[in-house]
Image (cartoon, rainbow, N blue to C red):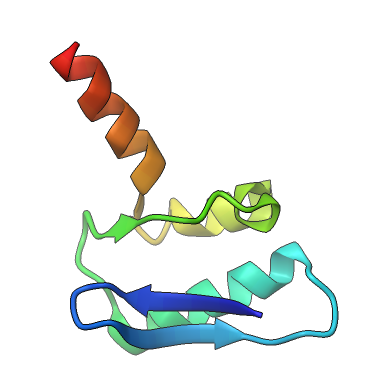
Length: 82
């Protein structure tokens, strides 16, 4: 199971359930969230860094959707402070 949460109001905005964990599982959950919410440019995507969320297919989906990877933004913030 893959779930996408709106952390502002803790609402589930996308999900996918399959018998096996595949990269498509994550992509389908992100697609559902995208079509349900149409997030503004610069919306933040933060994954739990699981193996499925690091695959190129899910990262390729995220970039055109104008999401920013949360862990990349956090890394940039750490570097600018140091």
